[in-house]
Amino acid sequence: MEPQRIAIIGGGIGGLAAALALLKAGHHVDLFEQSDAFEEVGAGLTMAPNAMRILRHFGMQDLVDRADIPGIGRVRAGETGHIFTESNMGADIETAFGAPYGFLHRADLLNVLVAAVRNVDASCLHLGMSFESLSHENEEISLQFADGSTHLCDGVIGADGIRSAVRMHMFGPVPAQFTGNIAWRGLVPIASLPDHLRHPHSAVWAGARRHFVQYTLRGATL
Image (cartoon, rainbow, N blue to C red):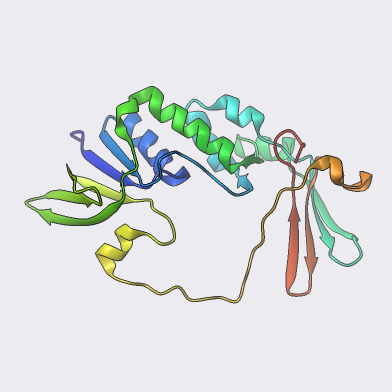
């Protein structure tokens, strides 16, 4: 397959991972991020073995090594703490699937992806570029940006989040439907927890119509 000119709208984890994969496959990539810097907020990410294998394929073994690997995974009763079940989330997972199961801070993953893309082709990253619209003619796509500039490509990937401007332009408004489910995420310093909660294990505390998920990040400091 001949190298294609691929434009990616959005410089989050998905957009950067797509850019890196396409660059390594020999395609010409331009990634456009509307912010003036690559920044990630939030808490932790669960990295299943299939995701860890991709990081290894990208040459990011050091990031895999920095992931928090849970010793034991437990399901507990939310009100009493009673352990319903537990399993070895470390060696058993690596043996069964050929890669570990672990946890990473979102910002750590993003920063390594940015560095990896820059190492392959730093010129493909464009900051401060707000996508506005696209048009398609003669098998070529033209992207229009808020600063008046345009960009021609063979294909475009919309990686611009839940309020995707690319999706909106292509398919029109698709109103979100509230499911009634809400997830709150946060980080707590390990040092502020009572002793019985300072351990490398992950746990799901299951309750009526709600549950709480607990795991460590950044070398069990969070």
